[in-house]
Amino acid sequence: MRIIIGLFFCIVALQAVAQQQQPKYIEDKYSIYCALNLASATGSYYNILKDGGRGGLKGGVSVGGLLNPYGRKRASTVFYGAEIGIQGDGREDPSTSVSGDFRVTNTSYWLNGLVRYRPILWSSKINPYVDAFMGAKMIQTSLIEQVDEESSQTLDRWTKFTPNYGLGVGIGIKLFGSMKNNYLDIGIYYQQAEATKIVKPNSVVINSNFEFSSKQVLTTTNQFIIKIGITGFH
Image (cartoon, rainbow, N blue to C red):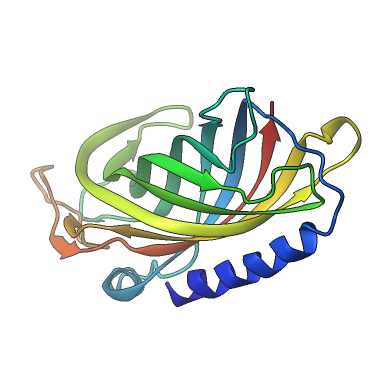
């Protein structure tokens, strides 16, 4: 969280530089963005993943839309909207003596309400922003059998829901040409989630009777996320 606070003050400095530009106010009605995510678990969640051999970085995608509360009547520093995201949390092999091609996949999904503050109301070359978000996060572990080269089936699935919330800061870099109304956004986020039971890494078992079981562990699923994406203003 201290990293987020430090970056916030960096953004304040960037805002001061950008304000030296000649302002041309833009009354955008809405914006749409898509970002690639790179996440790193923290705290007990990282230790659990590391012990199971899944402590590395995780990739994902997020998509969102934000609305100007005033429409095009006037410019606004604050936009409101929502974001959906998906993140691959790694895969592993189950413990089994049964013949077959099996795998365990771990995936996180979230649906969050989001507020974005962009202090600069004109088309600046550098456009900083701050995000605050909260919503629901789904953590899912699936046991899958690869039947043949073209088809697979899900044998079992463990799903948990938990609230999540957090903050993010970033900068937008204005693009040019036909993409002059778009920004390349680079941000860092801290996503915190309430404690819930997830499937412990490497604990899924298929016994000789073809019955499935797993061990669960209670943990928060907190993580830092770097997001790199494109935001388009309309």
